Length: 330
Image (cartoon, rainbow, N blue to C red; front, top):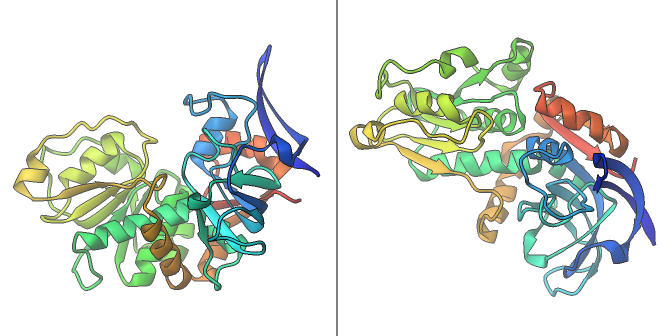
C-alpha cells in the first residue's frame, strides 16, 4: 500500500524536498507500524529540511522529529492495533525516518501510549516542544522550586515552541513568569499565556555586570544558550536551578564557577531525546491537567504537508511563534 511522505534527498544540484508516494516496504525496520495523524514543525526540523547542522547523513530521508497516531501493526506485546501513541526523540527525523509521512515504523520502546484525555491532535499541539517544556518544569521542581516561593521564574525564548508551553505550564501552576522575547509582536501573545512581565532579549544578551550579577530569578528555563545563558546563570537566586534546553544562540558556555560555588545554583541539561520511559510517561500524564486545551488553542497553528518546505524556512528566520501542527493527511 502506498502513502504520502515528504522526502529529503540528495541531487546533483544539492538537496530536494518533495512529497512522494512510498510503500510500507520502504520504511526502516522496527517492531511497530503507526498510521500517523499529526506531526509538528520544530527548529531542528527546519535545520534538517534546509540541509543545515549535519543532522542527516543517509538519504533519502523523511524528516519530522515527532508524531502521534494509531498503531496499525505490532510485533511487541506492549502495543496492539488501535492503540494511540506518541513518539518524541530517539533521533527520529534525523537518523531514523520521522513523522512527515502518513506511516512510520519504529522501535516499540520509543513510543508512549497516550493518556485517554489527550487526542493525537492535542499530543502534537503539545509536541516535542511541550513535552520538553514539561521535563524542564519537572527538573526545576526536582531542585526545590515550588509556587509558594516569592519571585519570578524566567523563560528565555518565550515565544518559541518550548518557551510558549513552559510559560503556560508555569502560570497554570501558580508561578510568576517573566518571559524574554526579541519579538515585540509576541508580547500580547505571551500575556495571554500567563506571562506577568516581558524582559527584552537585548537585556539578557548584554554581558552581566560581573561573574555574579544581582539575584533576580527563583528559577529559569533557557531556550537560547550562548550569552543569554551566561547572563541567566549570573542572576539566579541562591540554590535555584536553570533548565537548559536550546542552543539557538550558541553552544558555548562562557561563564565562571562563581554562580555554582558562591550561590549553589544548578545547571540542569534537558535531554528529551533519550529520556527514560518512566519519566516520559510521567510528563505526558502531567500534561493532561497542567496544559489546558484553551491554552493549546491560543498557541497552535495548523499547516499541511505541502506547506512544510516554506515553513521550514520561516522557523529558521524567527517568523513563527507557538506550536505548529502538521496534518500529514491533508
